[in-house]
Length: 237
Ligand code: DC
Image 1 (cartoon, protein in one colour):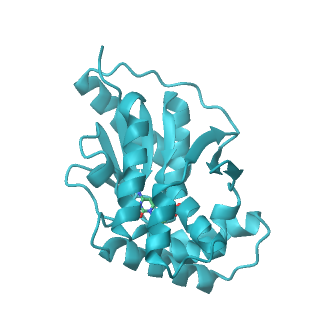
Image 2 (cartoon, helix red, strand yellow):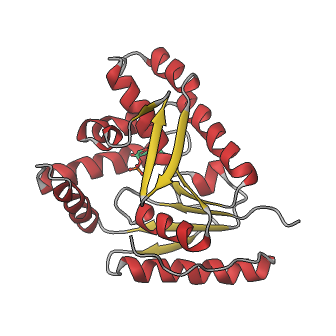
């Protein structure tokens, strides 16, 4: 039997990774792996335990936590040591601290291990910063999405507004540029395009166009590599 197929989608916050990765996983019937949700879960736990300034404690938490991801009704449901933290991990407080936590090498080691275990036997669409470089360096299809800072901030502002949260455009823009800087300058697994990744600029294209473009690339590569994929009909959420 042919091995399982691994697709990675990396890029900075707001580049359209999550939205496209979810839709693509659904169209292919693959498992969606949201690696950012795992870093967010550990950041939430560190905040909750007042451990943000205690490096050893953050590492201990990452090595001893059980994170379960399930994808229900278009949302990644995140269970952390039995507690549903799905909405808590998307707070501004977590946003502001997640880059520091995810720059800790031991935390990355623990979480990359969990991510690779998920990719062992499943057809997956993994999404993050280093899924094509570190987590799955031998992935079958690697996509790297980029978009301008202004466009990414506009998208995040819309998300917060939809949740009824009062955040300014400037605050979001600043948070994104800070995270970009930390994510791309950290020593271990920085945000970086894999040399064999396909880069797509999403600044001026719609989500539907993005998804179709990526699916075209996946179909092309799947055919070349002998994977028998079947595109499921689009299901409106
Ligand atoms: O994709 P996201 O915004 O949910 O990711 C949250 C943070 O987690 C992001 O600022 C950087 C970090 N992250 C990472 O370092 N490596 C990954 N594979 C995914 C996310």
